[in-house]
Length: 159
Image (cartoon, rainbow, N blue to C red; front, side, top):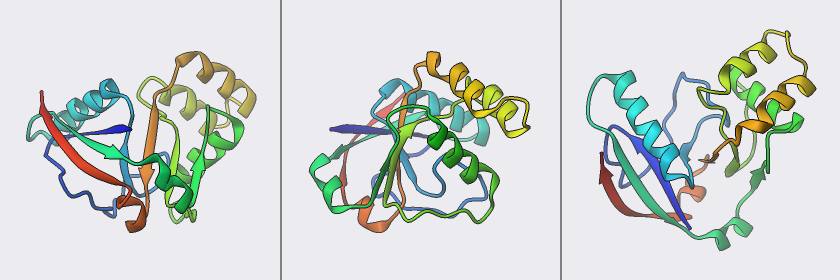
């Protein structure tokens, strides 16, 4: 399977970097199976950082290695997914023991709905009801060194 990473730099040897940003699935190296999603991330990264150019790096991912790793997978936006994202985004020291977390991405289009959930205006049911029609793209958060060994660099696409 091919997975993509969007950035403002080439990432041939991924690393898990500590960050003060609170992401959907916590600290990790993020990939997606959607080229369009990676391209969007690349353009956003350049815009946010004000340096570099949009770059999509692709990797070959061996699905068979999933059986050797601790994987948390969310098939769709659900109450369990929403709680997991909420914990990662709102609890500074929230940690899970997963090597890889796979599931929908809370992107710029979904964040207004999720922020209303965080503020208590929407409950879980209302939030999920509003998110499901949005056809959310996937994301893979590789959260351990062992997980980083499950894929290899393939190519770089400059936009």
